[in-house]
Amino acid sequence: MADGPSKDGVVRRGAIPPHTQLFNILNEAEQAELLAWAIDNERSFQPAEVYLRTTQDDVLDPERRTAWKLRDLGPNEKVLRERLMDRLPEIMAGTGYRGPTPSSLEFELNAYGEGGHFRPHLDLSTGKDRKPIGAKPGEDRVISAVYYFYTEPKGFSGGALRLFRLITGSDGTEDSVAYEPMQNSLVAFPSWTWHGVERVSCPSGRFSDHRFGLNCWFCRKIGS
Image 1 (cartoon, rainbow, N blue to C red):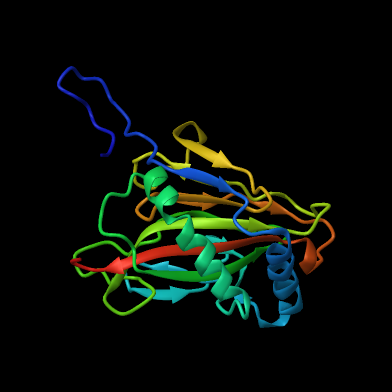
Image 2: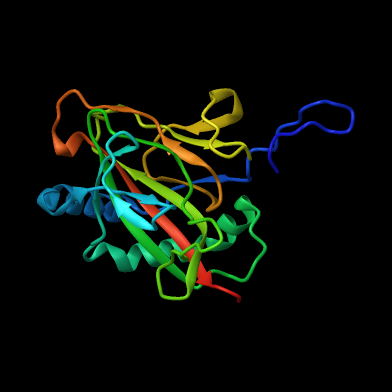
């Protein structure tokens, strides 16, 4: 619900949506392989776009988002799907999801360097003529998650994931909760949650020192 005066004239804010943080998603060898894949494929990363709800197009907008993205996970995709689907009951419980069990996963690997950020946004399209966004045609995202991994010692700072209360477009820190990127951890939340990535500092500028995050979207068929 959005802010608004109650019958007694008091403005009450909605709650921060349910969310959860899980650890030890991959074993040491699997995490090392994913990191090596990301670094070795630096040249395959492309500038990350933002989705315009008004035109339902993906466009570059550095004011709203500065990051690099890669959809290809190579040999890591199979094990990531297995590990995340194994943890799905925990993720569903932690995010308060009570609908039909998601049937597919959508991935996007992101790298945030110096000045990288993503202003508050939703992972869903909205509006009367909205276009569903999912891993397969006819599906929509229901649970969003971000998996963190990076080179150690860590070469960046900042880049916290901030989740906002149920106030459309809120950007006040008093109305939110933030999660600093933690090695081999995953933060999950409903896909209708407003969230953003705080600005990153990466003094070396090396790609290997970037803040790596794997966006994971659990999807289900619309109407199921």
